[in-house]
Length: 169
Image (cartoon, rainbow, N blue to C red; front, side, top):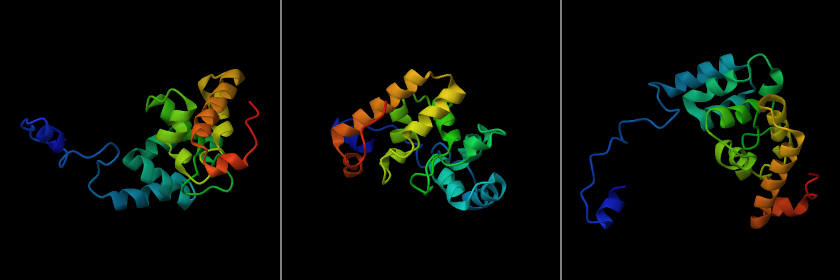
């Protein structure tokens, strides 16, 4: 922002960004927080680490949306990896807490799995089904959202996408 103000020949207001933590970063000892989260989460280490990297101190909030539903705590892809180990609770969190409106927003900008090696094609349908079961989506909307996500990807033609079958939707 300082550069923008400089370019506009304006004096920049005093910034607080060096004192205010980013969302999910407000803790005195993140390492200790992470150790405790991993121990209590019940998730495999790689999945717990993934949630910590993406959500910081909000990781327990994400996991909390799963409640007692273990299906929301299991990876939507197999095998799960740090890049693509998205769990169903992340879909709920994206829509309920992060104002996501479309599946493509969830996969590309909230959970980041769309940036992984499989560009989210390994979880797009499963993520849409989480929305059907827990957010009241119809099957038609789920198919439309998957198709919309794949159409979006098609514009950029990732190599992995070219290898896959067209969407069944």
